[in-house]
Amino acid sequence: MKLLIFVFSLFLFVGCSLKEPFLKPDTVLQESLVYSKKGEIYNSLEIKASIFATYLNRLDSKYNDGEYFVVSIFIDDDFEEPNKYGLNNKAYRLTLNGENYIYKKELKEDSELKKLVPFKNQWSHYYLVKFPKQSGVKSLVLSHDVYGSTTLRFREAI
Image 1: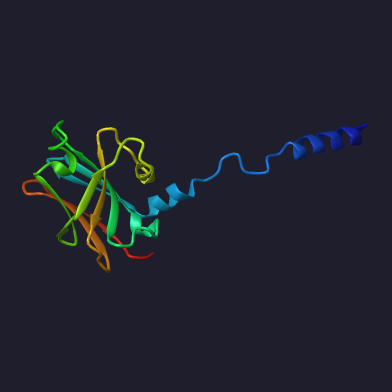
Image 2 (image 1 turned 120 degrees about the horizontal axis):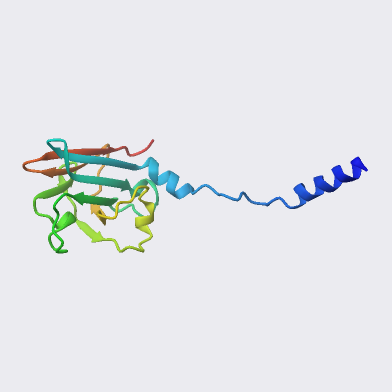
């Protein structure tokens, strides 16, 4: 009788197991975390600006005609007018190795690219930004004339 109960319970647990794991790891999000950096600009221990950038060239081979980043920007006391907030705020500059971006596009809430950003902030503005093709270490700099700057460094390969 004990053997019958054991065999029945064995079939119950083995027969009902899932063929695939219940929780699959999100490999795209894991990879994007490897190629993401965060920086902040402070003034008297107060955050004046925050940037979170994900380097797309290392995530997808279709980004090969320049240097592409998904950038999340939060600026304290930023304007609510779209032509004056985020990367449109004239007080802040975003450069890669000293060069200005050649293309920027604000991402909509449901954008697939926005899903590549591992950490999200409801007060940030999200952009796809393209810079001219460069080699070596990429130094992405968000700067302000008064408050200073923050630098995010990305390698070409790990």
